[in-house]
Image 1 (cartoon, rainbow, N blue to C red):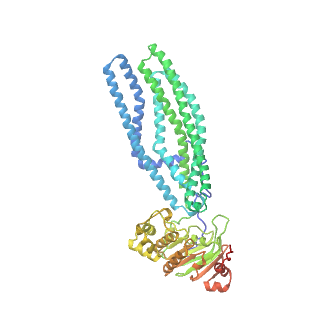
Image 2: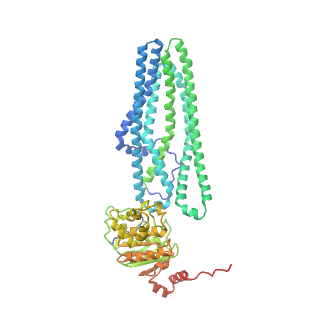
Image 3: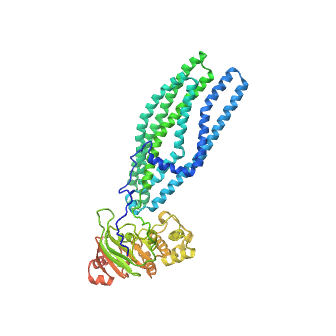
Length: 608
């Protein structure tokens, strides 16, 4: 037997509590985040280059058009028809080149964005599938979904176009400033006097915008969490007629999201008029002082028109840079949140040299103590052996620790003290996949995936034939009801199988376990949510399933365990009794009292 102790293995990236970085806006530039984000561009660098080429073409034409328009105006004023026509054709050609550049930019950068979105989401999904159950115990699904959806979208926009937009705007801004200085230095310097005012406005604006976007980020995370919880628990909500209360609660968080977005939109809307005002001031200065130069013969009308166009185009990239400043902050924060999630290490990991577990049948608990959180104990010094081919039932009151035993056998969690072994192999010393392939688990909450009944039965053995699927369904007692459905095994089940009854879902899950053909079966409260008829059908199926297999039955209904070879009674995480049904009844201990209370008649109804 392996002497590996069952202490939990916690990776350095593990988050001990819930993660919530939604309060953090992020730096404008975080070298660690940027370095990891850049790696996603490697596989799409050719498309990125073509998109950047299109952006450069657009940038060149943006700078060239005002200059060419100015020359065309001078040709018109001079009465040079040939020159006018030539310039018209040149301007048209340049504009068409700009359109072509825009097409290349949108086409290839769009592909880059979608490819990045595909890669990051796939990576995050794969990573989430490998995280231990403790992680999901601590973190709300809605917040995880917010990272997979909203944060990934944010960095996709940054990598696909945001960084290039910043580069495009900066280059365009510098190019226009240089051309203005070359065309008319005095007029350019006069026009650029409004830039400090714009810088001050932008600085003040981004300070308030940053707070607004933090509020938006926190609000959407809360909305996602509330929405996911509301949809997942809709059955309970309707059964307790809490629709109105839940609607009020969701309306509250949704209104917070609404007001946060309105505030952010208000700030964004305020920035445009400020830029327009400063642009108008710059244009007025050009008209006033440039017009004087034209009248004095120091400047041509074409040059004045070109200068006015440049002034207008000068402030557009300034506005773009201001907006991108906040977007980069948001994207850096999103990148930090994504990598925080990707850096979470599974709490339960395989040793690199861990062997695969061969077909096994014996389960043994030796001095096992366990709790779901540090400092707590739900199980105390459990010593139990389930022999090959034996059926052992675990019973006890709610919270006694019954399901914890099942979680430890499959190594969904790790013991704090002691060992859990299967055929002498410490479950910590073998690969998780080989261990779980040996153990078929049927839980009290039968989970079906969206798809056909056949796909759900085949979920654990995708290579199984239709005949094997039908045979497993017959052994589970599910074939009759499946055959009565209009499309039989091709019947599509809704999310979580809600269009089937609880008993039908449980029978499909049982067929899934049978098809996997594991040597060890764990039935964790498998009949607790089904009616009496379904329970009888399942009991017959269980008896067929148990033949030749080691079986552990965790049950709240004592009627389901009377045929077990042995019954283990748990109380507050400790074994208090072990024996057959007959032996425990004769002992008249805790099991006897539990069974007696189950069979005791209820109070007689009072007359009306």
